[in-house]
Image (cartoon, rainbow, N blue to C red; front, top):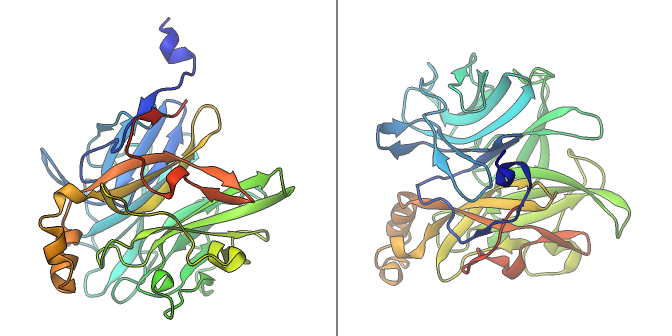
Length: 344
């Protein structure tokens, strides 16, 4: 028997851990390893609607085939973003994604597969859709306290939304009801004008002896300058209410816990998981500053910078999450640059 495969051991890593253009990451942990999913992207065999990669250790990634090879009938354009995959039962997986709805703006779709890497097949009409980019970045969350499933989504300078899903995750539990505003942007503060890419985790904090729900978001504008970063809020009530930002509680200028540095620009769209030891890790996409031509010259004209950043490769970065005073933090508050101890 290969003891290196059967006995957990710690490996080292250095960012970036995956050099392909792999934006808006979704992440699924399985006994055999980790499956990561990303927005549309070019592969050697052509454009993929939803990218997929596999790793045994969160550090060494191998590309897989297109996880959603057939487009939805209601979304024929090549604008497929922000996949999220969950395992509902053995051989039963759901994918939530957003795509351009024919004749409208972005909408959220559901797909189903019998294996983690697909191929997934789109089920029915869009779950919800509307003008522009309101209904994007879906993320399914199961409350560990009562096992109920929810869907988070939202952007376009509007609140992050949440609504309960049916137990089979093929629709909303009450389609006629309105979603709940979970976190509202504040247009009077540049760092809070836009929230997107929501992700919820839970943790019992031994210091405060209470359960916290942590809401990770990214903002404000992924392509506006280099201020895009990962922000944090928390609730002691549950996944549908009571979230307060790190800035509101501590008096800090903002709630960012992961931001740009000299090498990586605009880290965001975080995905959180744990390794074999229970240590939490965060994967994000980020733009390599070296990939941005003449950055200082183009940053002043906003339209030019927006176009450059939008179509520049976004690679995968990895760093551990720790806690202090009931709040998560990443050492250094920015993507790590040197080789360091990695996942177990």
